[in-house]
Image (cartoon, rainbow, N blue to C red; front, side, top):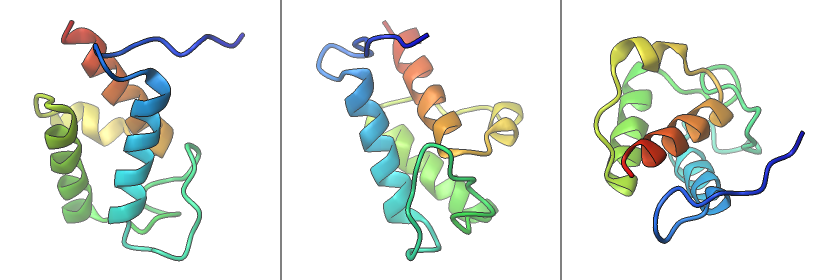
Amino acid sequence: MTEQATPVSTDLSEDVVRAKVLTVIGDMAPKQDVTVTAQSILIQDLGYHSLALMEVAFALEDEFDLDPIDEKTARQITTVGAVQDLVIKKLADKK
């Protein structure tokens, strides 16, 4: 079942948010010679390590004006798609 992109903020659609998250993660990825997709695994595919993951989290928090994510939630995020979903959820919760 496919759903239409829904606005997650007054000026950002879900598609725009997903694209911005993908760009931030791709730009900051330690491995620069790989294609970044929603299915990309942060550690294995993109070469992220704990410090780099923290940096990308801070960058996304700044980009979207989000509250910091808790450590338990952060440990469960392994793919770019999971990061996109979390950002969309946090933006929707801010409404």
